[in-house]
Image (cartoon, rainbow over all chains, first blue to last red; front, side, top):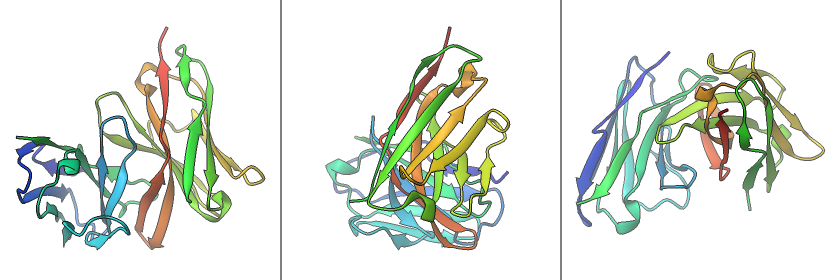
Length: 108
Length: 121
């Protein structure tokens, strides 16, 4: 199985901050990496697919980059509604994808 | 509007069975890949199963032989039959459309609101 490791596991930041979350794969997954946002008690929401493609309707302050084993999700200027948990997910090993353990983004 | 609505969760004893349903609107289930993903309380996301548009099915090792994914094209609904349930199957179960973007490239969008399955005596 391909293991996905996110860092940090939790992060405190302020409104307006630039935030970067990292996701590392245990082997190369090309650009087959997606990012989701999950708020408490809600379903996950797709933010970024194929490492860097912004899902329709997602604010442009979200961006993704990377290929191979190392990927990043960047929020350029944190807004109050961005405080949530973020997950990466690889589809390289489809039909059996795996997720990272999540990064909880909290208000400082 | 593309939407998924799950139902069927509840409390079940270890060794028992439960069938989850996921009703789709705004798109055709049988023309898409459809997955179940679960989340144990306070934990991360775990993929459970997928059914392809052609009918092929795949399962996580943790549920293989106990869970069965299926669909009813006339009802535009996805199902997950869960047998021999264990305490470790306790989770919120989400259905999601598995969007195919090319070989090895797919993502989950949208997701249903989830249904809670609790396995306990």
